[in-house]
Length: 147
Image (tube, rainbow, N blue to C red):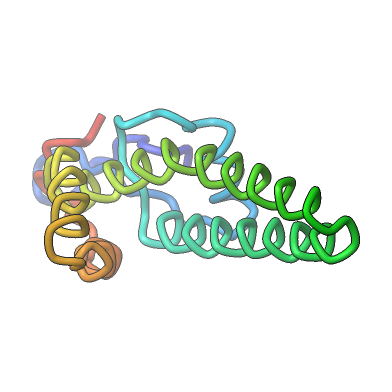
């Protein structure tokens, strides 16, 4: 089954199930195929594997940058800052997109991503929001974001 393929069910309507992903599939889908795609749905596995992959990517950049900083001194520190900025800026759009698609999978509007950002800025509760949308089960029947 390809992603977002309608399935007939016993409830009388079309159901679109989001696909389970592996770590490499989730990274490929989020960074290459759907880099800035805010439409469709993202399964829990896609959401969490992308989160894990992003963390590991930033950690790898940090380790390489720290080694360069130790070897090159001040120039290495500047290079570390540039590498971290590029990595983090490159992950902002796909992170927001996968959050919006995950919200669609639980039958909520993707605009709630802005609420998560506001919660993080105002009260530091963005992580709680992120975990909640990550653990809620998908809504397959009657989901308005089946496209």
